[in-house]
Length: 405
Image (cartoon, rainbow, N blue to C red; front, top):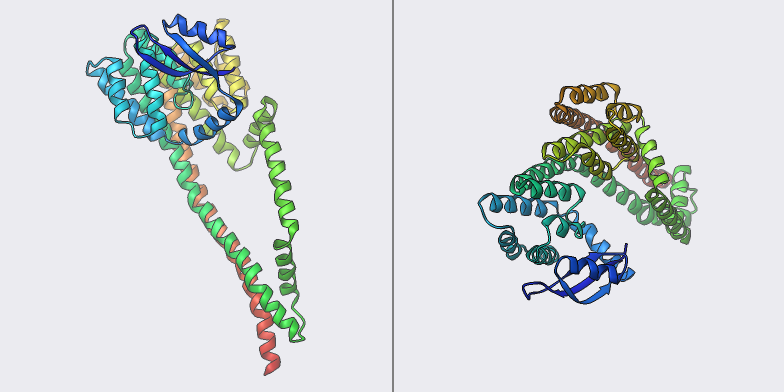
């Protein structure tokens, strides 16, 4: 759907500006007038500007701590009896990120004109995802916006902790591999070639292992490497675009879940995320069908998404949700049975919360064990490769020294 930037005059005479999604400029003007906002100019965001926006949004999404702090502070202000518009004004003044500050200013101006906080957040998906918007909607409808924001902040903190554990476990192996590969490239391109040339100039024959390292060095420093890099980059780009399609995402997720070691870990993370998100949404007062719709959009796994969509359809038809989850191949039968028990007993929220906590604890243990096993394995492999390069470097020198003696 096209995106439009607008400058308008609110009902109180204030000048406001922002962005809006609409089918056409006419539809955009109509939406604004329904908010009692009179647009003076509407400009469609071009594809280049939209690409730039998406590029910056990739960095904005990583600043989760900022959004968590904003949500906590807004919750505290609202629970203290401060009006929403005043709270937004206070938080806008103390925000250091200029882009986030602009977004908050536009949201506040739209709320001032009489638009709901939920509708104002919808156009800023770079910061506020579908879960955030859905829980804010519940808070506005029930008059407990402050408590809903507090729940959102806790949920985001919990998710951030889980993601941080995985990232922390990956940092050391990635850094180790990077420096080892850098050492291999330097040794094979800067150290071995001069030694090999000196030996050949001395009329000596290179050992087989040294000759192979010389050949590898020629490959690394030739134009063929650039061609290979371009081909690999093109293939990676094509694969990435394919994975963005529904069919590609389904095949990718199916393959990842079938991996011998990492498949069970990925499955546990997907199910834990599903259980945690659904439990939070149900606990906030969102209807089951709407909760499943939101969870389906944020699950991050196509197999799980299809299972959740089928469960939602069964809910709307008056049936249970456990059967499609059991048949998805993602959720274990035991967990699906626990969901069914929670559904029948009316304690689905508590059951989902317990499932999430148990799976997250199990995932932490698996990650720690994998990290403990992978790190020494990488060290051994890299040490063997560097040792082989050192052997290929020293062997011809020793042979020349033996001949001189």
